[in-house]
Amino acid sequence: MIITHEIEWDKCLSHKIWPAIKKGWKDTQMRPIHFFWGLAGKNIPYIKGCIERNEEWWYVDNGYLTQQITRYPEPKIHDLDKTYFRIVKGGLHTLQGKSGSVDRLRVLENQGIDVQFKGWTTNTEHILLCPSSPTVTFFINDMSQEEWEENVRSELRQHTDRPIKFRNKPRPGNQWWDTDIKDDLKGCHCLITNMSLAAVDAVINQVPVLTHRNNVAFKVSIDNIHNINKTPKHPREVVEPWLNMLSHNQFTIPEIEEGLAYKILNE
Image (tube, rainbow, N blue to C red; front, side, top):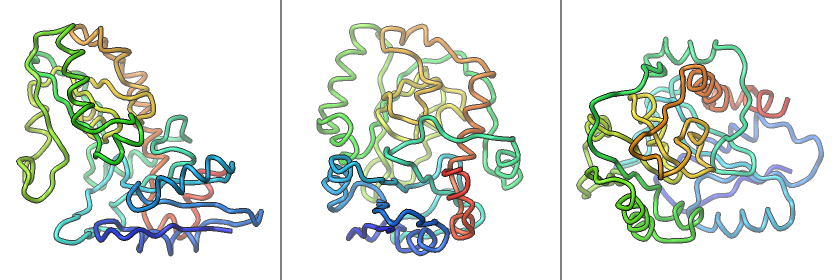
């Protein structure tokens, strides 16, 4: 029994995703299978309920390597074949995802999506803090976004005197609206986040990351904040297979409708 949870938030795209899920997802065992878009509305208590009852649940959100959607003034997909969404079983990010040939990575590259690992930058200066949304931060860290920032700044000051910059999610009216994260990544020594996909942007743009253990980029993250000045960098042999794994754990709406997402994630 497939259960798609609706939320009253006009910036999400669940109304486009859920019909594709219902069409392309096989329901063979007649047990509850829950799908959530984001953590807004009542999704957090419903997810906790799934965990308590040991019921299967999947989290759906923006993809890792994708053409970006427009959220404001209303959500819009610009190209169905270039817009990918992640579908994650029992978590917010893919940690031990499916992988395979590099064919999907090459498709993304041919679509003009940046998927190339270009090595790591040198001549760096500042550290960039990029927290997840307040909702995700509270769900993952059990604290406010402001508390997360304060805690990270305090710990950083024990290990480095590098300048610290802060970047929040761009929203209409805030100082990051109409700005590009690439500008903040220029000269960046390390990006620190809990769960933000800014970590993927950072790696693509040659910047090391320090993330929460449940972030998809944890596999290529530095090990702990004590090493922030040295920032041990993962070799190409680690980063490129990780990027390939990302490509195998995100799907377009047509791929979801056709059952490809179900096949890859459940085979």
